[in-house]
Length: 532
View (spheres, rainbow, N blue to C red):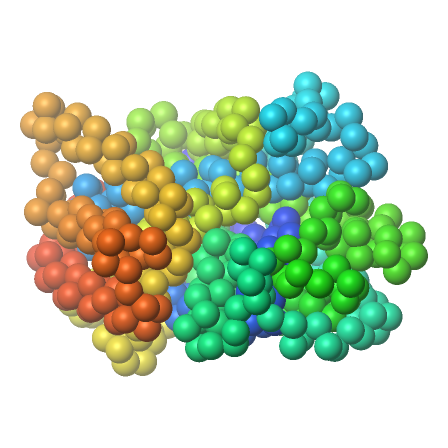
């Protein structure tokens, strides 16, 4: 059975919004402020610029490749099976973690009113037995919604996303109107008890840390859900690019307003030691702490309700999106064939259930929100970095495919997007980058060895650029990053990373297959599509 094209432009846009506004709106403004202080505002603009650049690249790819789980297909189509596995695996593992991290954030937020949800273990809050049972029950509910068809999933998302738009705007507006501590915008960040002067170098360091490990990029990468649901969208050549642009623009506006309201709502006495020592977690979350400080009991109730609804909606959406990626990898024989089965509702049921099982297993791993976010951002940026290389290669491989959305000056835009993706991967930090490389590299090596033993070709030559690229990123981190033997200034380090990116991009494009891979199963942009 085929997947059904039931998603309208409105549903696809709201799916992008709900994939972007989850637990991040409750926590990201706090972590970004602690990392960069007032510089968190331009950090959101920088994160938005990077996201829009990547969204432009994937808008063309999504309108060309009209298949659900397309992020697993794009590198396969242009560079063969090894690249397809690396790209698909990296985005799949990051998607699989999203429902888990959203529900963990939800339960942590609700812990202030329901303390039996979590327990303390060596200074770290983990789920209690009751909390774990509730988390698994919610995952089962989300699985049931997904298995009943994408149209039903869209109805849930459409209804709950309207709430997710209204509440952040209301909270931000009220906090800003009642507090108005505009002097907070001039308080610098501190490091180790010493006030950092507002030098260009230090300000730049704080800004990029907020983008990478502070959760900003993690929040803004939800645009990719439109690409992974392209096979279930009406008129995807038009609706996929539009949904990505509209959804990302709406989300960025809301996050900027939230960040500004947070900065001016913190009591000045809480900033005597600077932004980096700010602590607002004692009442179940930073925004809830601000609401209590202002005596806004109704806002606390609203935040607790939204803490249940916003992360839950995002978790429900990503459970389905992760299943589309594994379904497509099963169809293309990159993962077991059983994953390609589709039920009578047009849903890849085995893939959905697999996402459920893995997501529930991840509840047993309980690191903090910010640590998981840095790892997920690094893994996602590695996966998204293949977009510019694949787009330039596909333009050469498919010169007659031109009746879809096409970006102007593709070489310049793809080059800049690849540089930005390389920078962002590095900004996630050493631990996150190396963890992501290991999580991607070891399974990819096992996949290559398995196919070598069975004497099945996987287009190894076309996929070697991945290994070289990831190796250079790790080598750069070990040599030139903060605290390493050849530590560079921020500007010099950015120049080195840009050099690596601009060296690797033409290598990646030139190593592509002469023709698109026959293993890819996709509808291309010129194929007839049902009307919207």
